[in-house]
Image: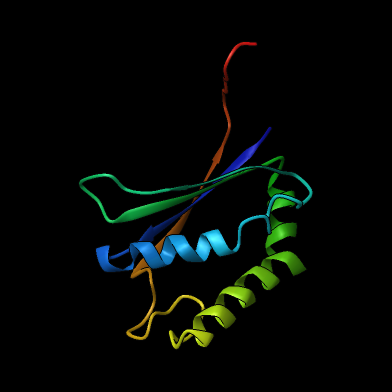
Length: 118
């Protein structure tokens, strides 16, 4: 049964573009992980400042292996280096501090799923 991890990021309006740029620069780093099934960065439309980073994994073990692996460290180190080169502090920073003002991770099991019919 697949597992879904949703990283909920509180992102002030003036940091949205920066957050999205950082994720775009890391594109492709998770797709090759064993057990990876899906990724989406969900932008808030109205009523909230919370971005959702949605990933779906074959199992909790696959997610943990990725999170503890080299690709995860490399992706976060690359974001940190790019931010430093642009004078923005560490990878989650932007001169005045982090892009997100808070975060939490939600975990779900997929109880039922459907997709388009072929």
